[in-house]
Image (cartoon, helix red, strand yellow):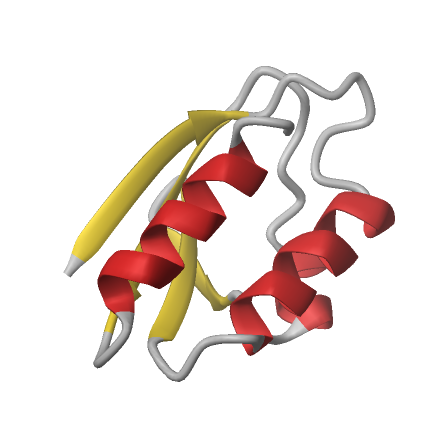
Amino acid sequence: MREIACDITDPLGLHIQLAVLLASEAQRWRSHVTLTHEGRSADAKQLMELLMLGVRSGERVVVSVSGPDEATAATALAHLASTF
């Protein structure tokens, strides 16, 4: 399992556009991708689950990747998460 911790720096938090980007990238991989925020987790491939977490600007999230292509998926997701 690979974990990527990142702070959400966008003034609007994890809003619809960022959530769509994350879900789209997560769906490209066979690995299971989870976003965790303040003890709650969401399947990163499910847009509504991501939005239901209510992540605000300045808060920390952890993206966990586990599965057959986790190394490549984690690299791609880390690159995407650096833009949040």
